[in-house]
Length: 110
Image 1 (cartoon, rainbow, N blue to C red):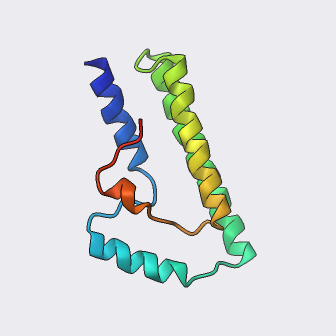
Image 2: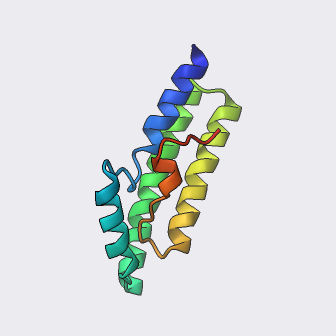
C-alpha cells in the first residue's frame, strides 16, 4: 500500500511540470510552435530564476514528506534527483519546454 501511495504521489509531483498536456494533437501543435522559437539571453535568465524557485519549493515539499515519514531518505533523494535532472534538461534546451512523447503515452519511469 505504501508503494502505491509513493507512486501516486510521485506521479502527481511529476505532472506539476510544464509538460502537462492532455491531448496528443495539442501536444504536437505546441511542440511544433516551441521548436521554432528562440528565447533571448535575458528571457532565459528570467525563466531560469523562476524554475530555480519552483525547484527549491519542490525539494522543500519532498524534504517535508521525508520528515513526516511518507518517504524514506532514499526515496526522497531519488525524487529530488529526478527534479534536478528535469531542471538540467530545461537548461540544456535553453528553458524551452519539450514533450517526451513516450512519457505521455502512459509509460512510467521506475
